[in-house]
Amino acid sequence: MRTTLTLGLCILTCLAVFAQNSSRPVWKNLGAPQLVMDGDQPINVDIGHAAPAVVDFDGDGKKDLLVGQFGGGKLRIYLNKGSNAEPRFQGFTYLTINGKEATVPFG
View (cartoon, rainbow, N blue to C red):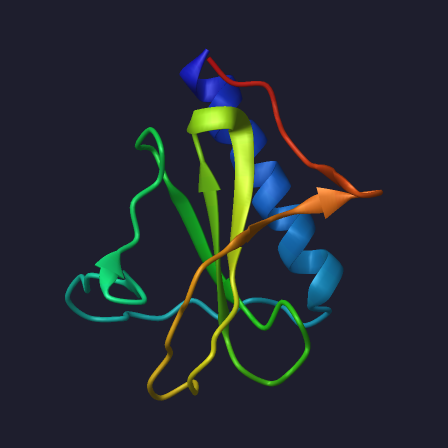
C-alpha cells in the first residue's frame, strides 16, 4: 500500500510540476538539510512521508515549494513570497482541479 501511495504522490507532484513548467528539472547537490519554515513555524505535514519538489508553479520567476503529503493524499502549494536567493513561505493551498481538491488514494 505504501508503494502505491508513494507512487501516487510522486505522480501527482510530477503532474503539477510539469503542467506548470515545460523545462526539465535540474538535479544538483543542495548541501546539508535545511529546516523550511512556513512563516515562523517549520513546515509540518499531517502524517509524515512528505514528497517535496521546488518549481516556479505560478510563473512569477520565483521557485515555489510543492509538498505531496501522505495524510489525505493531497499536494500542498507554498508560493514563494521572498526571492530565489531567500525564499519565504507564508501559508499554503492545496492543488485543485475543476475547483475540487485533487487527491490520490492513501491509507
